Amino acid sequence: MKIIVAGAGEVGTHLAKLLAKENMDIVLMDENPEKLSDLELNNDLPTRVGSPTSISNLKECGVVGADLFIAVTPFESVNMTACMLATNLGAKKTLARIENYEYLQAANKDFFAKLGVDYLICPEKLAAEEIVGALKNTWLRQYLSFCNDALILLGIKVRENAEIINKPFSSGYFDHGKYRVVAINRKNKTIIPSGSDEIKSNDIVYFITMKNNVEFVREQAGKVIFSVKNIMIMGGSRIAQKTIQYLPNQINAKILERDKEKCYMLAEKLTDTLIINADARNVDSLRSEGIQEIDAFVATTANSEANILACLEAKRLGVKKTVAEVENIDYIQLAEDLGIGTIINKKMIAASYIYQLTLDADVLEVKSLTSADAEVVEFVAKEGSKIVKSQIKNIRLPENVNIGGIVRDGIGSIVYGNTQIMPNDHVIVFCVSSAIRKVETLFT
Image 1 (cartoon, rainbow, N blue to C red):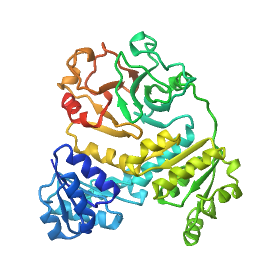
Image 2 (cartoon, helix red, strand yellow):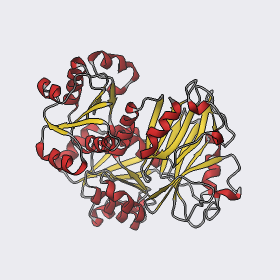
Image 3 (tube, rainbow, N blue to C red):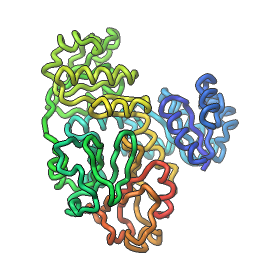
Image 4 (cartoon, rainbow, N blue to C red):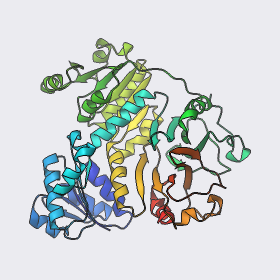
């Protein structure tokens, strides 16, 4: 597959590295040669200096006949224009990163497709949705829904009080049919569990379950529910703004922003939110703005280190739930070790969404597990594919792959060895990132 990525920012660079590891025919283009020089040298990644809105530059990058053109520069208008040009020059599929989430409405899909923009993505919107999900489910690290809640993925950090620790999977303890443990993160190592494995204290454990069993999972994991009514957000970033827009009405929010001019802009845009001109990195500012009355603290500035430290300080001051945007992937495990609550990585979320466009199988969703080197993929089983030809126990699955559950006719169920997958079943698969292509062959 020939892919062109326009924009060597956080999202574009992460995606290009991911695809380059899979020996894709990929070119990363950007107008800034300094951004590209180190990338090409250190990652064996073909790059080209050029503007995505220049017809000649697009042709030089090989846009004619490209299977996928991805425009993820920071500028919406540039991305939209680039996709329109790429389509008319012969690219088969295009995707544009946008800021205006009004464009994402289903009614507008055909309109943009006619213009030459096949797919739209707003990373800030996706990140904000995960933040709101974390505030609604305070005892979770990650919550993902499949097929309108027919199956639910729960990521939970378990402690010493959890009933499920120190019990081998081969013991039969987990054979109750109410959930399946599909992945474990332990000290920066991802484990797709087998019979000899067991859950340890401080593991981040990923469960697949049905909605009516979520409470059972919570009890097994030893977690306590508490509601969030008041939150404080550090920085008025675009993610912060979208988070405010998606918050339930019963949650009160205030934003601490140190840039006075930006405060005026935020006050005009977010009329129901308290905007305070203060530096949330300062302990005195936190105290004076009532940190002791806050249920959750969210840090979404562009500085990963500042977000981590601010969340640590908020927890020290008694805040029960903290959420940090950590864009530097190298810092994610550090944040986990320090006890930061929910970690959001915008580029991983966006890259997972885009990655599914490069797969040949019928894939509805690809989600990255932020705290593990693993992906969860929703496949649709096809008539005649290998996955429907026998029971799961008789199918040779690639190493580090776990089929968690299926949704048939809108009803979710946990998968066992004697489960027979049928055509049109939605199959939820967990695997390390490097195994997705191998799993894909079972569904084509």
